[in-house]
Every structure is written in structure tokens, then in C-alpha cells.
Image 1 (cartoon, rainbow, N blue to C red):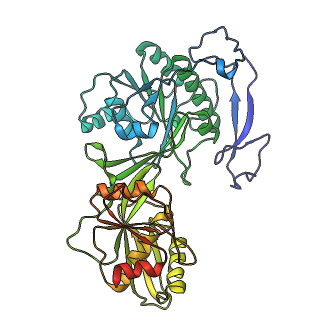
Image 2: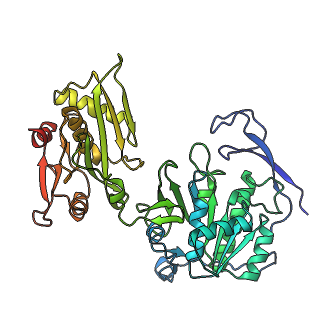
Length: 452
């Protein structure tokens, strides 16, 4: 047996050091560097048997055989969209998210829905707890097998017996391997256990889904190399005070990272939201001032969201500026544009902005809807519910064009809007839609169209 080797890792960012330091030179955190054993004995492959290693031969790129990747459908349209069509055989998918956001519920729901033999390995819950959740999901799938184990060698022995077609691990931070003398969740254990499952996935063409914990900064816990090792990194996010969850792909070797899936958390599990624009636009009786509908894009997906604004006289000396789901600095910039370029006296007034539905938006195309909602609240004059907006505001008060405006217009028409306001400088074909398109060039133009 080889001599045990130790080194020092930062528990916060994963940086490796030859000796102990009080402060990490990479993330500048104090007292996060700990000593870990990085090798206990010679490592073998996941089957624990010696194999003859095949020597790869260099090929010309036009001689390499190419077959379209074989995918397994999860029967979950939102997840399939984000993955690019389904699970690729032999792929490693890492799912991260806040505690309690629904990561385990999502993957158990996927495991119960896939028409394949699935092994669900849990290191955090007992089999009875998982059974309780499955009862709530109301599934009668008999192809899903549950294993509660944290030792990777025992997991691989169970895999040889079960021969699953899909493996789910909940979570990678709870696993440990016998070849590393370190506690579960440490940098070296996460790296080594992930490497073992990657080798298993590639050798057996079995897709593996991992759940990963995240740090207080919102990044996946463990070394950054963990995200480099896997094929797909998914982020499951949302506000626990709202029922809607968004699934994004931060990395995808087999598809686009511009897609996203939207779910609604219910007592019976996560429901797929096929038309997210309906849930992001609140239902109300009659027209109310201070609301405007924006045509935005989340990745490749067009969404219609409601922007709510409230402008009131400042009771205290300093006016308040507050935004929920929107960048406060950008709100201050738009207010300065309205003050300087359009002559609206908002400097002595409180301005509050909210994006309905509890989502965060950073698309500059909602700028026009933001200032329209602010002007509507300031004038106490409602904007018709069948109007929507898609344009960016420049510092000179000009209405700037946005990309993929035709896709936004088609989404607005599909949802029944009768008029959309866009930049005068957007180039679009005249007869591709029946919705009325109003082109504006300056902030003054939007005010004249809405309130005069």
C-alpha cells in the first residue's frame, strides 16, 4: 500500500496549498484551509478489477465516426427542453439549488417517470422518507429502485446487481470513497467520488444525475473543477415564498444553454408550466395605473411579464428607490433619463418597482415597460391591458432596438395583445403579423401615445 499523502485545501473555494495558511490567497477567507489525505492506497477502477487499458490512436477529424447522441426521454417536457432533447447515454448531469427549493422532489419525479430501470441512491433520506414523498407524487412506477447508501464501493456493487439504465445520486456531498481518508463533503472526497461516477458513466453508457449543494454565495459547493468534470450543470432556482421554479442550464455539452424550464410547486409535486406568460401576468378586474406588460426573453423562450410601479410623494426628506426582481441601479438610471430628457419631476417622489411572479429579469428590453409603468403611476392613468412593450432606453432618452423582436411580437400576438410598442429603429417585415406595431423614437413619443 502506498504511503498516505496529505495536502491543504480551502474549504470555501477549493484552492490547494502545500502548507497551512491563515488566509486563502484566492478567495481571501480566513481559517478555511484544512489538511486532507488525498491518497490512501492505489486507486482502481469502479469495478475494483484490473483491466487491460486500450491505447487510443490519433485519427484525422474527417475519419472519426460520428453518430447522433442516443438520448433517453425523461417524459418531462421542461427538463427535456433544457437538456436539449433528453438524457444522453453516458452523460453526467449536476443539479444545484438552494435548500428546500425542490431538487430531490424534481429528480425523484423524473426517476419515477422515466420508463427505464432507475436506481435512486440517497445519502440524506431513509427509504421510508423517500416512499412518503413518492406517495405524495402519486406514482405507481415499479421500475424505480431505492438505495440508501453513502459508500461508493457499496453503491457500485448494488449497480452490478441491479443493472440500472439511469442512476440518480442525492447528493454528491454525502458520498465517500474508501480510497480517500477524508470526511464526506470535503474537497478531495467530492472530487474523487465524482471521478468514479464519471468513469462508470462513460464505460457503461449509463446517464448519471447528481444533486449538488450550494454555498451561501449561490455557487455549487466543492471545488470548481466539479463543474468542469461533468457534462451538464443545471441550476434550480426560485423564491421559496412563491410557487414557481426556474430550471436553467449553466453548462451543456450536448445542447444549448439558452433554454429554461418553468415549474410550479404543488402538494403533489412539480407541475410543468407550458405557458409561463399566463402565470407572470396577474389577473385583475379593470385597468389599474402603474402596470405595464413587457415582452422579454429568458434564453430562447419569449415571456410576457408584468411590471408594477408605484410613484408617491416622499413623506421623509430623502426619496426612496426600491426594486424587486429588477436592478436598482438601472431603475435609478431610467429615473434620471425621465428627469433630464423628458422633464418629469420625480426627484422628490418615492418610486417602487416590482416584477410580478417573483422572478428576476435582467433583459434591457423591459426598460420601455418600466418607464411606462412609472409614468402611468405618476399620472394615475391606466395603460390598456392589451398593450405591451419591448425596447431599451438609452441615456439620451432614445428608444433603442432589441434583438429577436419578431419572436417577441409573435408571442404577444399569440397571447391576445392588440398593440406592441417597439423602437423605431427595429427592422421588421410589415406583413408577418396582425398585431398593431407602434414604433417610437424617444421617451416623449411613448408619453404622447399613452397619456395624451
